[in-house]
Image: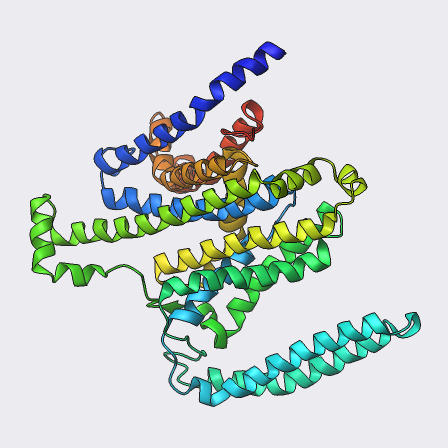
Amino acid sequence: MSSTRQADTSASPLRGPLLFAVLAVLFVLEGTVSNALFSGSWNSSLAILNMGLISAVTALGVNMIWGYGGLFNAGVVGFVALGGLAPVLISTQPVAGAWAAGGPRLMLALALGLATLVLAIAAAGRLRRAARIWVPAAILIGGYILTRQVFDPAIAAIEANNPANAGNIGGLGLPVLLSWPVGMVFAALAAWGVGKVALGLRSDYLAIATLGIGEIIVAILKNEGWLARGVLNITGIPRPVPYELQLQSNPDFVAAAARWGYDAATFSGIYVKLCYLAIFVAVVLTLILLAELALHSPWGRMMRAIRDNETAARAMGKDVTRRHLQLFVLGSAVIGLSGAMMVTLDGLMAPGGYNPLRYTFLIWVMVIVGGSGNNWGAVLGAVLIWFLWIKAEVWGPALMSLLTLPLSDGPLLRHLTETAPQMRFLAMGLLLLAVLRFAPRGLLPER
């Protein structure tokens, strides 16, 4: 037993670099080799890598919540969506006439709602036991009715303002990078509200609560058209890098593309993706640095001690619920950052696209495969799983064509061929089972 443990320890320093080297080879093959497995396009390779790095930011947030504190967040999609709302409200241009139509009444309604909550909480804390339930309940009901009386006409006026092209409140027209920390704040505030209610409960209740809150957030974004146009989506969100058409109209850039052996259209796509790549790498490395410093600080050791034995931590005088709330808010803020980055990369806010399978289940697969509790493992798992998730849609039909060569044309062959692109779901499940069987602590386990 001890000899096996010594062997694992001696091999662990090289495991991470080797796995990242293998991952780098996959992206080089995707960019240079053109066959049934790889596209041979640097545009494709960089596009997968950029989205993989955004997924790595999401995985780092989940890893903080689960790997540091053992808290199960089943509503990752909701915090990603909240972060994605920030570029819309901060960076898009103001909608002409929207603020005049219902802006002041909207702010008044929000103030009334906040005042209702504060008053109900204050009443619950000061009244005697007999009135501690009924009086706050009456305040909440009355405040809700009053708030809706102001809120509904304001929303109707905003959505009626140029509904064909807008119908929403618009943004502030600020640089899009400023919206990223705002996305963190949005997700952190939602996490604080969820945590104050659910973190004192058992872990299964926390999972149910976060699952419900995540779906509620996505449903609000879909149905509240005044906020981000709902299912009509918002396009043209500003970006922090140049536009391809601007580069293609620049003679110096066209000349540089020719020197590298590319046409201007292809080279402009590569250049823009490289600009995004530089920003995303800087964000990921900064988060890893901060997360590692926190993990190896007294605070990080305390969080892992609470994770491993809450009873012992409470006996030592630690406020477990408060520390869990801190961790839940910090991890959710990082998840919100990834949502803002994703909307900035896509230039599109589409609430209908926030699918729990993609933004919750797949993120959990990334963390588990990479190694929960290890920040580098979360990054490795995120980029690797995203690469396989994208390529499985291409490799699935190729593999199915090979396996069905002996079959004659018929219903079975057509069914297998038509469903081959969906093999990514089967592939992710098999990969997760294989990792749980042969590397239950992940590819880069926590030390």
